[in-house]
Length: 121
Image 1 (cartoon, rainbow, N blue to C red):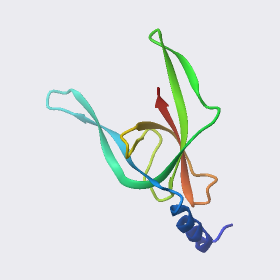
Image 2: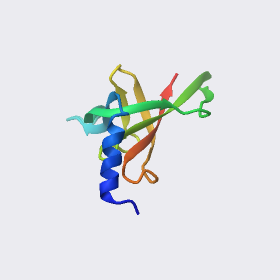
Image 3: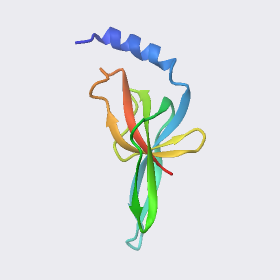
């Protein structure tokens, strides 16, 4: 087992390698006064330090409504204490939005979270 002191040291060193910033957004559903459903994205974390990396070998394409659809996959590294769930989305500082496919922190020893993201293209 890795000590909490070692984890803190790794987290501190890792912070130097997270040069980008992003926001984490979560979809909220509300019911209006006439019973209709309204969906919106609400920011749950902002100015999150991160690093986005292409995920090699994870492109896919298929047919949707007769049109070809392609997904490009990425990995996003963020601090371990960041609030994030599968199904949230990430909005990068440059405005590009990604869907969070998977939150993977099982093998990171609480040093960081690694997210699998998809961008439609």
